[in-house]
Length: 445
Image (cartoon, rainbow, N blue to C red; front, side):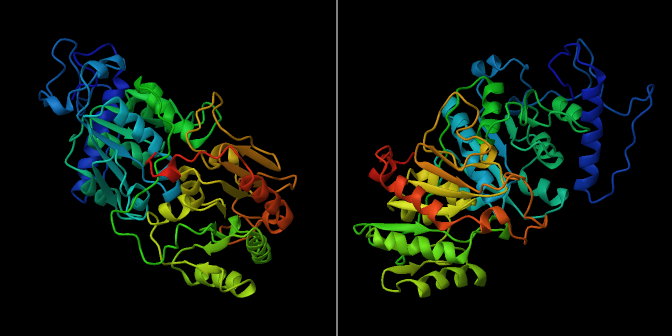
């Protein structure tokens, strides 16, 4: 199997990886344990490329023919079938949609398959840039993941959005032509660089996750489209949705992990303040007993007539119309907060141990020259339709999972965050005249 058409003087290392990985994947697909070792110099146990004939590999089909590394070649022969490998959590998958939109804008006739986890596919529901969602079981074996994706080399281009081994192996399985994020250094850097004809180093610009993904578009030589696309449900609006005529606010008090959690007293104080501002309050959350109890506690401590809980009643995609018609959204560092920012609604996000420069909500249609709309540390930041309130402890952001370094531990930078600071940010957001109303007018961003 040639690495480049006709052989172009590349070192033997790519062919070594290509042959060994091919053998390993065959072993995995058959259920056997791979026992491949590095061949000796005189061995011919991996494919070799002849400078004139490209080796003894069969001629590739037109849909899997390798491109030259120069990205301009892809403009001459546009890919017809693209696989985007994004096995992340829900919020991370949502932040990958600007890259998917960039691919679709560059090659509008191409079919795009999004390969993700079955637990994260909700982030791509109703996305107009995606033709098919291929979901893999969470924590599936490599064998099961390969079987879920497609036949080998079925795509013209595969894009690896994570610098992980599995993501790159899935991209290798999908296409001869691969682009993706690779680690800047470490043991996986070299073979992942060989695996990708067009590569971008993760964190090279020390910017936002969206900027990292869009560096892949830069490597491919296509324009960036920095728009996070929120999911849309094809079903009729559920009866739980409030009347869009009366002004209301959304509070999402429940992150996935405890180390991103604010205090119950803080959420109650915020809800009371929003009521004084003349807004009804709707609390959202997941279907777990903890999420429902946290929302019910706020209702019981305020006004059950004007404060309502929708926890567990709406899907992720059904949250989109609820949030985009709200006057304001307030929530912690979680996927729903990324969704809120993408709708254009004024969004106040509470950040503790996590660096907002990398993971802050992406403001609607933000396209500034910096690699991130946020800085690492500032008590209150504002860009576009998003405000970030951050803890002020000297350790912020530590990028640790709670003060006890466990996902179920709390973070002092959030438990000590006073409600008055959040309320001031909410008042600033409600009084802002910079809010973009495009999404509220029904236009799909």
